[in-house]
Length: 141
Length: 143
Image 1 (spheres, rainbow over the protein chains, first blue to last red):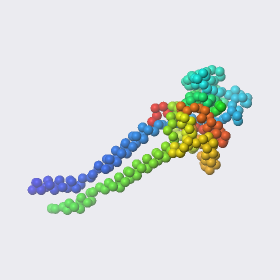
Image 2: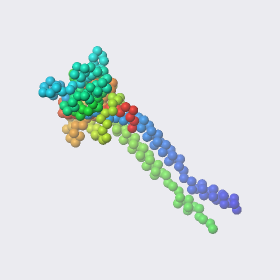
Image 3: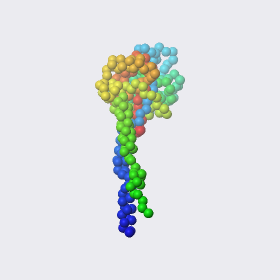
Image 4: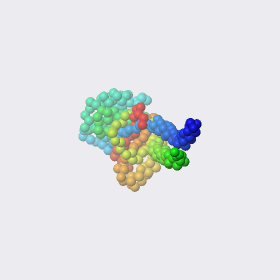
Protein backbone atom coordinates (compact mmCIF):
# COMPACT_ATOMS: atom_id res chain seq x y z
CA UNK A 1 0.00 0.00 0.00
CA UNK A 2 2.72 2.43 1.04
CA UNK A 3 4.79 1.58 -2.01
CA UNK A 4 1.90 2.30 -4.30
CA UNK A 5 1.34 5.67 -2.65
CA UNK A 6 5.03 6.59 -2.96
CA UNK A 7 5.09 5.61 -6.61
CA UNK A 8 2.02 7.73 -7.31
CA UNK A 9 3.53 10.72 -5.49
CA UNK A 10 6.78 10.32 -7.47
CA UNK A 11 4.90 10.18 -10.76
CA UNK A 12 2.87 13.27 -9.85
CA UNK A 13 5.98 15.24 -8.90
CA UNK A 14 7.60 14.28 -12.20
CA UNK A 15 4.63 15.51 -14.18
CA UNK A 16 4.41 18.84 -12.32
CA UNK A 17 8.08 19.75 -12.72
CA UNK A 18 8.71 22.92 -14.79
CA UNK A 19 11.83 22.87 -16.94
CA UNK A 20 13.63 26.11 -16.19
CA UNK A 21 16.83 25.36 -18.10
CA UNK A 22 15.98 27.48 -21.13
CA UNK A 23 14.93 30.43 -18.97
CA UNK A 24 18.18 30.25 -17.03
CA UNK A 25 20.11 30.06 -20.31
CA UNK A 26 18.41 33.17 -21.61
CA UNK A 27 18.86 35.04 -18.33
CA UNK A 28 22.57 34.28 -18.35
CA UNK A 29 22.81 35.41 -21.96
CA UNK A 30 21.15 38.71 -21.04
CA UNK A 31 23.43 39.11 -18.03
CA UNK A 32 26.56 38.51 -20.12
CA UNK A 33 25.33 40.88 -22.85
CA UNK A 34 24.70 43.74 -20.42
CA UNK A 35 27.99 43.15 -18.61
CA UNK A 36 29.95 43.29 -21.87
CA UNK A 37 28.15 46.35 -23.20
CA UNK A 38 28.60 48.15 -19.87
CA UNK A 39 32.35 47.64 -19.89
CA UNK A 40 32.68 48.76 -23.51
CA UNK A 41 30.70 52.00 -23.29
CA UNK A 42 32.66 54.94 -21.94
CA UNK A 43 30.79 57.83 -20.45
CA UNK A 44 31.01 60.93 -22.57
CA UNK A 45 30.39 64.61 -21.95
CA UNK A 46 30.84 67.76 -23.98
CA UNK A 47 32.26 71.26 -23.99
CA UNK A 48 30.26 73.91 -25.84
CA UNK A 49 32.15 76.76 -27.44
CA UNK A 50 31.29 79.46 -29.94
CA UNK A 51 33.10 79.30 -33.24
CA UNK A 52 34.90 82.17 -34.91
CA UNK A 53 37.55 82.56 -37.51
CA UNK A 54 40.07 85.37 -37.52
CA UNK A 55 39.22 86.37 -41.12
CA UNK A 56 35.57 87.12 -40.43
CA UNK A 57 35.13 88.20 -36.83
CA UNK A 58 36.69 90.51 -34.33
CA UNK A 59 38.83 88.41 -32.06
CA UNK A 60 40.91 91.02 -30.41
CA UNK A 61 42.23 93.44 -32.98
CA UNK A 62 39.03 95.25 -34.00
CA UNK A 63 37.23 95.67 -30.71
CA UNK A 64 37.35 98.45 -28.14
CA UNK A 65 38.00 96.27 -25.11
CA UNK A 66 40.96 94.00 -24.61
CA UNK A 67 39.61 90.46 -24.72
CA UNK A 68 41.27 87.62 -22.90
CA UNK A 69 43.01 85.39 -25.37
CA UNK A 70 44.55 82.03 -24.62
CA UNK A 71 46.93 80.96 -27.33
CA UNK A 72 47.45 77.22 -27.64
CA UNK A 73 50.67 76.71 -29.51
CA UNK A 74 53.85 74.72 -29.70
CA UNK A 75 56.92 76.46 -28.29
CA UNK A 76 60.15 74.66 -29.24
CA UNK A 77 58.17 71.46 -29.72
CA UNK A 78 56.37 71.66 -26.38
CA UNK A 79 52.61 72.27 -26.40
CA UNK A 80 52.01 75.38 -24.32
CA UNK A 81 49.38 77.94 -23.35
CA UNK A 82 50.14 81.67 -23.61
CA UNK A 83 47.97 84.16 -21.76
CA UNK A 84 48.93 87.85 -21.58
CA UNK A 85 52.56 87.07 -22.30
CA UNK A 86 52.81 84.31 -19.69
CA UNK A 87 53.49 80.78 -20.81
CA UNK A 88 52.06 77.68 -19.13
CA UNK A 89 52.66 74.07 -19.95
CA UNK A 90 49.86 72.61 -17.84
CA UNK A 91 46.16 73.38 -17.69
CA UNK A 92 45.98 73.67 -13.88
CA UNK A 93 48.27 76.73 -13.77
CA UNK A 94 46.30 78.23 -16.63
CA UNK A 95 43.05 77.63 -14.77
CA UNK A 96 44.27 79.30 -11.58
CA UNK A 97 45.30 82.42 -13.53
CA UNK A 98 42.03 82.44 -15.50
CA UNK A 99 39.95 82.27 -12.33
CA UNK A 100 41.37 85.64 -11.23
CA UNK A 101 40.34 87.41 -14.46
CA UNK A 102 36.98 89.13 -15.07
CA UNK A 103 34.50 86.69 -16.61
CA UNK A 104 31.99 89.06 -18.23
CA UNK A 105 33.71 89.55 -21.58
CA UNK A 106 34.45 85.88 -22.15
CA UNK A 107 37.61 84.29 -23.39
CA UNK A 108 38.99 83.37 -26.81
CA UNK A 109 40.97 80.17 -27.29
CA UNK A 110 43.20 80.52 -30.33
CA UNK A 111 44.37 77.08 -31.34
CA UNK A 112 47.42 76.66 -33.57
CA UNK A 113 47.47 73.58 -35.82
CA UNK A 114 50.57 71.86 -34.45
CA UNK A 115 49.21 70.86 -31.03
CA UNK A 116 47.21 67.74 -30.10
CA UNK A 117 43.43 68.06 -29.84
CA UNK A 118 43.48 66.90 -26.21
CA UNK A 119 45.82 69.73 -25.22
CA UNK A 120 43.71 72.32 -27.06
CA UNK A 121 40.44 71.20 -25.48
CA UNK A 122 42.05 71.23 -22.04
CA UNK A 123 42.27 75.03 -22.46
CA UNK A 124 38.52 75.19 -23.15
CA UNK A 125 37.94 73.03 -20.07
CA UNK A 126 40.17 75.28 -17.94
CA UNK A 127 38.20 78.35 -19.04
CA UNK A 128 34.93 76.60 -18.15
CA UNK A 129 36.28 75.47 -14.79
CA UNK A 130 37.47 79.02 -14.08
CA UNK A 131 33.89 80.23 -14.49
CA UNK A 132 33.79 81.61 -18.04
CA UNK A 133 30.34 81.14 -19.58
CA UNK A 134 31.41 82.43 -22.99
CA UNK A 135 34.30 80.50 -24.51
CA UNK A 136 35.10 81.01 -28.18
CA UNK A 137 37.19 78.59 -30.22
CA UNK A 138 39.30 80.35 -32.84
CA UNK A 139 41.17 78.14 -35.31
CA UNK A 140 44.57 79.48 -36.37
CA UNK A 141 46.03 78.69 -39.77
CA UNK B 1 -11.17 8.23 -3.48
CA UNK B 2 -9.38 8.46 -6.80
CA UNK B 3 -8.25 11.60 -8.51
CA UNK B 4 -7.78 11.90 -12.21
CA UNK B 5 -4.11 12.79 -12.39
CA UNK B 6 -4.15 13.45 -16.16
CA UNK B 7 -6.32 16.60 -16.06
CA UNK B 8 -4.33 18.13 -13.17
CA UNK B 9 -1.01 17.84 -14.95
CA UNK B 10 -2.50 19.53 -18.02
CA UNK B 11 -3.73 22.52 -15.98
CA UNK B 12 -0.49 23.10 -14.09
CA UNK B 13 1.86 22.93 -17.04
CA UNK B 14 3.72 26.25 -17.49
CA UNK B 15 4.40 27.16 -21.11
CA UNK B 16 7.77 28.89 -21.37
CA UNK B 17 7.99 29.21 -25.14
CA UNK B 18 6.36 32.70 -25.45
CA UNK B 19 8.58 34.03 -22.69
CA UNK B 20 11.69 32.73 -24.42
CA UNK B 21 10.45 34.27 -27.68
CA UNK B 22 9.99 37.65 -26.00
CA UNK B 23 13.37 37.49 -24.29
CA UNK B 24 15.09 36.74 -27.58
CA UNK B 25 13.23 39.62 -29.23
CA UNK B 26 14.45 41.91 -26.43
CA UNK B 27 18.05 40.75 -26.93
CA UNK B 28 17.83 41.38 -30.66
CA UNK B 29 16.25 44.80 -30.07
CA UNK B 30 19.04 45.93 -27.70
CA UNK B 31 21.75 44.59 -29.97
CA UNK B 32 20.34 46.36 -33.02
CA UNK B 33 19.79 49.70 -31.25
CA UNK B 34 23.30 49.64 -29.81
CA UNK B 35 24.63 49.02 -33.35
CA UNK B 36 22.73 52.09 -34.58
CA UNK B 37 24.21 54.18 -31.77
CA UNK B 38 27.69 53.01 -32.73
CA UNK B 39 27.16 53.85 -36.38
CA UNK B 40 27.52 57.61 -35.87
CA UNK B 41 30.04 57.34 -33.04
CA UNK B 42 33.38 56.13 -34.29
CA UNK B 43 35.94 54.48 -32.04
CA UNK B 44 38.02 57.50 -31.09
CA UNK B 45 39.91 58.27 -27.90
CA UNK B 46 38.28 61.46 -26.73
CA UNK B 47 40.16 63.95 -24.52
CA UNK B 48 39.88 62.84 -20.89
CA UNK B 49 38.14 65.89 -19.51
CA UNK B 50 35.09 66.20 -17.25
CA UNK B 51 33.21 68.46 -19.70
CA UNK B 52 30.36 70.70 -18.64
CA UNK B 53 28.72 68.04 -16.46
CA UNK B 54 25.22 69.18 -17.29
CA UNK B 55 22.39 67.16 -15.81
CA UNK B 56 20.67 66.83 -19.16
CA UNK B 57 22.70 66.28 -22.28
CA UNK B 58 21.40 67.94 -25.41
CA UNK B 59 20.43 65.96 -28.47
CA UNK B 60 23.60 65.13 -30.40
CA UNK B 61 22.45 66.47 -33.78
CA UNK B 62 25.11 65.91 -36.43
CA UNK B 63 28.08 63.94 -35.15
CA UNK B 64 31.44 64.60 -36.82
CA UNK B 65 34.22 62.22 -35.78
CA UNK B 66 37.91 62.92 -36.34
CA UNK B 67 40.16 59.92 -35.80
CA UNK B 68 43.81 59.80 -34.72
CA UNK B 69 45.02 60.15 -38.33
CA UNK B 70 42.77 63.11 -39.08
CA UNK B 71 40.12 61.18 -41.06
CA UNK B 72 36.69 62.77 -40.91
CA UNK B 73 34.01 60.14 -40.26
CA UNK B 74 30.29 60.84 -40.44
CA UNK B 75 29.11 57.24 -40.50
CA UNK B 76 31.20 54.38 -39.18
CA UNK B 77 29.98 52.04 -41.91
CA UNK B 78 31.02 54.46 -44.65
CA UNK B 79 34.35 55.74 -45.93
CA UNK B 80 35.91 58.89 -44.38
CA UNK B 81 34.88 62.10 -46.11
CA UNK B 82 36.91 65.04 -47.39
CA UNK B 83 36.38 68.59 -46.15
CA UNK B 84 34.46 69.43 -49.31
CA UNK B 85 32.19 66.39 -48.91
CA UNK B 86 31.64 67.32 -45.26
CA UNK B 87 30.64 70.84 -46.25
CA UNK B 88 28.14 69.54 -48.84
CA UNK B 89 26.65 66.91 -46.54
CA UNK B 90 26.20 69.39 -43.68
CA UNK B 91 24.62 71.95 -46.01
CA UNK B 92 22.18 69.33 -47.29
CA UNK B 93 21.42 68.20 -43.75
CA UNK B 94 20.76 71.69 -42.40
CA UNK B 95 18.64 72.65 -45.42
CA UNK B 96 16.46 69.54 -45.23
CA UNK B 97 16.23 69.33 -41.44
CA UNK B 98 15.63 72.75 -39.93
CA UNK B 99 14.49 71.33 -36.59
CA UNK B 100 17.99 70.46 -35.38
CA UNK B 101 19.07 74.13 -34.89
CA UNK B 102 22.43 73.29 -36.44
CA UNK B 103 23.56 71.19 -33.52
CA UNK B 104 26.96 69.68 -34.13
CA UNK B 105 28.95 67.36 -31.90
CA UNK B 106 32.65 67.18 -32.75
CA UNK B 107 34.24 63.96 -31.51
CA UNK B 108 37.94 64.43 -32.12
CA UNK B 109 40.60 61.94 -31.03
CA UNK B 110 42.84 63.51 -28.37
CA UNK B 111 45.99 62.43 -30.27
CA UNK B 112 44.88 63.99 -33.56
CA UNK B 113 46.42 67.24 -34.71
CA UNK B 114 44.38 70.33 -33.87
CA UNK B 115 45.03 71.42 -37.47
CA UNK B 116 42.37 68.99 -38.70
CA UNK B 117 39.92 70.10 -36.01
CA UNK B 118 40.58 73.71 -37.04
CA UNK B 119 39.75 72.91 -40.67
CA UNK B 120 36.45 71.32 -39.64
CA UNK B 121 35.65 74.29 -37.37
CA UNK B 122 36.32 76.64 -40.28
CA UNK B 123 33.90 74.66 -42.49
CA UNK B 124 31.24 74.79 -39.77
CA UNK B 125 31.70 78.52 -39.35
CA UNK B 126 31.50 79.11 -43.10
CA UNK B 127 28.16 77.33 -43.38
CA UNK B 128 26.78 79.35 -40.48
CA UNK B 129 27.08 77.07 -37.45
CA UNK B 130 27.52 79.49 -34.50
CA UNK B 131 28.68 77.02 -31.86
CA UNK B 132 29.78 73.41 -31.57
CA UNK B 133 30.09 70.89 -28.82
CA UNK B 134 33.38 69.06 -28.42
CA UNK B 135 33.09 65.51 -27.12
CA UNK B 136 35.07 64.53 -24.03
CA UNK B 137 35.46 61.31 -22.09
CA UNK B 138 34.78 61.59 -18.39
CA UNK B 139 37.94 60.30 -16.65
CA UNK B 140 37.21 56.91 -15.10
CA UNK B 141 33.56 57.10 -16.16
CA UNK B 142 31.83 53.96 -17.32
CA UNK B 143 28.19 53.67 -18.22
